[in-house]
Image (cartoon, rainbow, N blue to C red; front, top):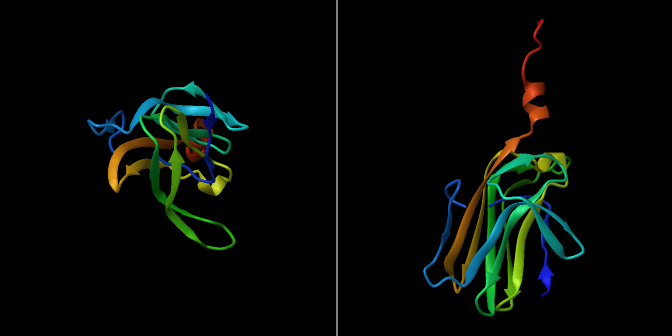
Length: 156
């Protein structure tokens, strides 16, 4: 089965940590979510988790199977991030994707630049026929190195 992978410049994903909400007449069924490796159009789940380390190179998201052919609109919402050099501010990213019933579709995000690694709630919403069919929240957290660097030295 063909799997398509979409890797974004920035990342997001549900509304309450630990919950995936699906409509009763689900157009998409959640297969898995968490941290992935992704390359050449395939994605492999490494860890099923809602807590994501804010580190360059981290890829996370969700994989679903469509129950029918559909056009899925997606919206990623995330804490404000500002692109260095341009000053451009981002708080969401949107797009659409045509999916084929029975096939697996990945909605993944990847931190490619340090300025994208903003901690907080990263929410992915999927819409079909203007209706919300899935919402998933990931909690992005600074990594252990970042927390350690933020602490004052012991002999200060």
